[in-house]
Image (cartoon, rainbow, N blue to C red; front, side, top):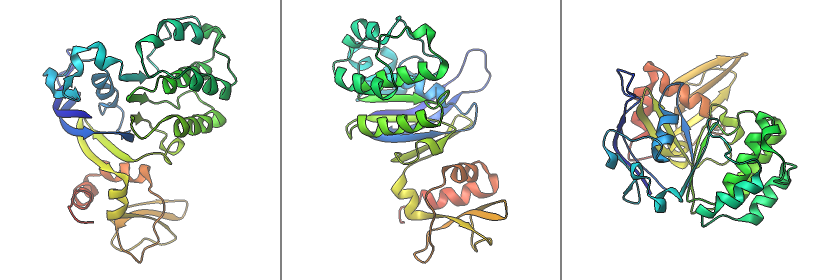
Length: 283
């Protein structure tokens, strides 16, 4: 269990906090992490991965152990994939020999299947890869490590349409119910079938941390020709109205619209009313 206890972090060169007073518990499941540019998403993932130290070390723990300590028994349970990460070895096979030994749950057969899905063998020189192929190799390896906590920062960056679908299928096949995956992305549609909860940051503050079932029990997402009555938030595009309304049994709700939800939480005129419903104890 990841526990954030009034988590606060600020960069030395900045006068404002990158993250302020975030409190949450994050357990097994696939969690969507949303936020505007500069909201603190990458900083949060780096803190969980032990790459940054919060204001007080005990503000971020995994099963009671501070991630800032970077103890081997904790670090082997966590792996981060981001555009900033670099392969320290020439090939995936070489990385397996020297790096995977630190991860006791590594599954070589899963890695072989994942690489095969992407048309790779593991023997290709990584330096010759395009950005997309480099990302695919990293994802294939990351899923096969089978860490208890997997942190994905914009995993779809650099991937073409078919590669995104392959990655979606791979995640569904490789991630089991005991693992915790936090996926930060601006292209929500690429993975929306898999999310079990949504975490929203705004300007370094936690706005929402909720299971998907709780969201859909309390609000409906409407796509209609005319504006629905009682809308909490509404957008118009190409003659259609996309809206969020309080849940009512007689509404025919569309699938959860993460972009609309995010926009509504960013809107000062709708945020308070929406959060009042989402945070209510009754559906």
